[in-house]
Length: 620
Image 1 (tube, rainbow, N blue to C red):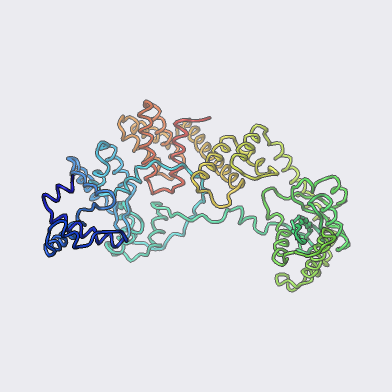
Image 2: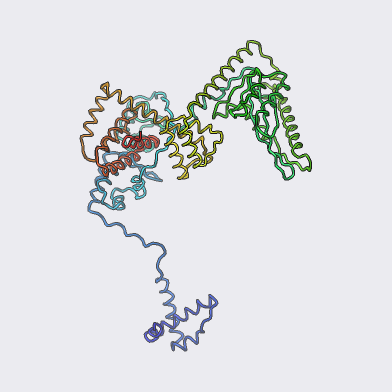
């Protein structure tokens, strides 16, 4: 029907369309009529048909729709947009530096973010795109400010040290301090402002020191090594050759034809000289391996040591081992601290670097041959290393160092000190054993199995069980949340969970200490808390949403944990007095304002959100 109408109305257009379709069919190797056949059927001249074909070729591309979604129309100007723009402009004029534009991005001060969030609360009915255009903030940035705050992540804190007071004095320093008191932008922009606008020739480091010495800006410092790691470096006490040996086992694979065997290499190392004293090669790491390595060391050195340090593996502390050691003091290694056995661990590392793949091709006596091969390799390696000069010991070898003879007083002093060390470790082990709580351990067993955490000897589980229940629950929740969000560090295991629980317990302990201190000082009614209570009466007398912003600003605007806990507790009291719907809305307003305060670190912001939630809905 359509073809008949086209032919009766405009045969010329039909002819051009058929010629164009014929070219398409030829390109796709499809059958098509010839040009004379088309012209004869439509009764149209050739020249006229090709003129229409040229018009049709130009017209067809214009009929194709564009790919993708149609462009969104810009939002119509709202009646309040001009008022919002003037409000933001007035704030910027009153607070120089609150918005700073660099070549890459814009920087905003905490006060500017707070003002924008307050305006958004007042104009919640306004479309977010129109609101972003009115306040001149990119839509993506504004959505980031309005997004729900992330869950808190415990991070270890370091105490900043006091820098030396700069020697610069005079009007230029006062100009810097006066400008900083009115500055609302970032520190880098402020340094540019000092040099470019104030003409003060101070460098960035000097400006930072001036502000920090006068207590108006504290510089953040990167977290370094844990203090205990630095303090314990080199803290392993040694006495003289033969005073103390360190023993441990290492698995050695051997392949004979298509069969793979695994042996245990038990090695004893002298703690003072790092000499390899005794070794044993057996199928398993058991009490017999400890006894055989100890006996080999005694045969090599001609005398037993005063003490032997072994890890907490049950097979290392059997009655058979106790009898074999005789007068030698048996010491347990410190739990969860591998560096306590650094001497033997370092020996194993060196051995692993030098040991080739033990692969033999034989047909009879495979297991015995493999054991003899490992025993030979270990002895050759140990004897060669023992006689190699050491650069850190003035060119003396381990054998020469081990030949030094101690005096009787040194032997007795070392024996007393080692016995005390053994008693302390045994007391610590019994104390840790007494802290086991069956209910908590059962809870940890269930969650360890669910999270796939491997801890066959349960040392980590026992250590975690020694912390309060709230820290264990919070730690498991944080670990599980990071696992679901795929933000766990690679290789995170049960020890990572132990670190989280330890950090939570430490942080909550600090919060309780600060809260208790606040309660005691409130009872004393001294001058400082009297002023805080008076300020709280004035702030909390308001009934509008401004009381939330005021409490947040006062809590985060101080470096005192006491004052911060006071104002967070006051804010929780204000929210608790509202109904459920209004309480939830004001809680989100408060958390957004906290997370938009970049003057404090992310750890402090997350901790403030969590403290507010704990005070608002306590779990214990």
